[in-house]
Structures are given as C-alpha cells and as structure tokens.
Length: 287
Image (tube, rainbow, N blue to C red; front, top):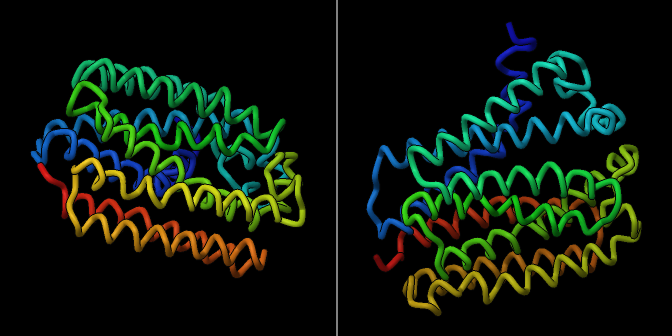
C-alpha cells in the first residue's frame, strides 16, 4: 500500500502544471497530423506523456527534498512532510518512467519515447543539479520544458520538421520571462533553499529584467514564423504579433520597475499568452 493520499500524489506529479503542456502537445499532434484528429493516438499520447512527465516531477522532488524542506513555499509538499515516503516515490517514479516510455514506443513510435527519455534526463539529472550551481540553470530547464511539444508532434508524424522546431523555440523563449518573474517573486525562498536563481545572484533584478526583454523580443519574430513559412495565414500573423508585443511590454515594465506588481503582470500575461497563441494556431492553420 502506497503512503499518502491521492491528493498528495497529484501534488507530487505537479498535475496542474502538466495540464497546459499536455494540451499543447495534443495541439502539436493535431498540427503534425494535418488537422486530422485521431482519438486513439491522442489517448496514447496523453497516457504516455502524463506518465513520463509525472515521473520527471517526482524524481525532481526526490532529489530536492532537502531544498524543499528549507523553502517556505515548498516545505509542505508530500515528501518534505513525510506524507509520501521517499521509498514509495522512487518506486512509482521508476515504474512510470519505464511504463510511460514503453507506452509511447509501442503505441506511438520510438521517437516519442526517445524524446521523453531526453526530457527526463535533462530535467532531473542536468537542470535540477544545476539549480544549486549556476543561474544559467533556467536556460537549460527551458529545454525539457519545451520537449512535450516535440513529443506531441512526433506522435503523429513519426518525425520532426521545421514547424516542430518553430513550435519548440516558441515555447522555449516563452518560458524565460515567465520563469524570471517567478524567480523574482520567490527570490527569498530560493535563497533559503540554496538555489542560484538569477534574481538571487543579482539582487537588484536588473539582469533578470534585461534578460526578460531579450527573450520576449526574440519571441516576437519567432511567434510569427508559422505565418512566414506559410503554415498559417493573416489571423495568426497579426494575433501572434499583438500577443508578443503585449508580452514584451510587460517585460519592459518589469525591467523599469522591478517590483512584485510588475513581476506578477509578466507572470499572468505569460499564462494567458500561450493558450491564446495555440488557439490562434488551431484556428488559422493551413492544413
């Protein structure tokens, strides 16, 4: 019998965070399948992706039990409090990793499984240790954060192409102002935990604000790239341009006034940005 309640395991798997990435992966599957929806393919993608993403989240928290105990924001998580035992978490993480990757390989294709393995390795065994060493960890962490889109794309096409690369880069760039805002809001927590996040290294927030502008600015042309390569039409082009300029404007606000209020504006804008952009892609995709 596993320790903990179902609620504890949902929290341990970071299911709320997974919701957005899973929906994004499904949209990428639909795009790669030329606008054709296949229910069984979608079901296998969701099951395989949720299992592997849950495994990655659990492994991350196993590695960071000591850090989570010191941070007010995370000290009540299932592992630091002992509601879920470390032994049970390790067993579940291994089972989900093996079954999830096998599921993707058998019911979809080997490329999807390989990408899931890369996602777990990068997230848990490169990004997670780097959080204690260098503020560059955020750049590394954005890579596995964007891989679920590639898994969704590969699920349908059994291959990756230029549109897959564009969608990957959009999500990669989108994450950075988002995470810099979170790091600023919880900079004291990260310092208690001994994590080297950018706002902790540069306490003025100048570098985090400047970096937010750089990545938000790079996102403007990248977000419009689907239209430039004729995958979408005018609705997506002007919609993505408008959304990206608004996101850039919030980054500029944060750079000018590094306060809790402006950081929250960046964070909330980023949360709204991605669903709207993906909706425009679905509405205006030329399949």
